Length: 165
Image (cartoon, rainbow, N blue to C red):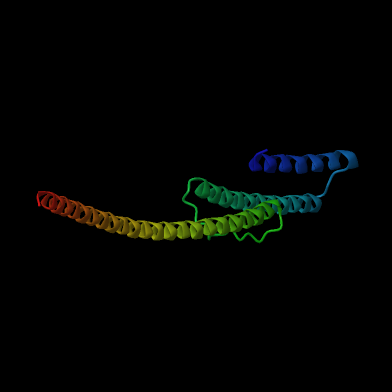
């Protein structure tokens, strides 16, 4: 039930109780008693209004924070810091507790992501060094091949010269 409807229901209940009291007792209430009952009703209404106002305010703050987090724009360092001991206060405290836990998880993920990034950079550096080493080996193999080919040609020429003698 909406909070405003609850307030209207409460006021009509109090007025109904006053009417029932009047009918049950069966006597006229005096002016002082009527004023006293109206003052009590006014105090009750002010208290009810304050309760509804503060509850709606707390729920509005909670709703706004949930919306921020759901939209991905939420500041996980902000807290509701509600001090009331009613149901809305309890929900707000548990929400703050949840956000603290969520913030811790996000911080852990950030640290892990930084570690993975650093490891990736180091791996890229090692791979680059390996590629350079492999190029050096390939160049060395090419030089050895050229030397072997040159020696083979030289041996072939020498062999041909020995056969002519």
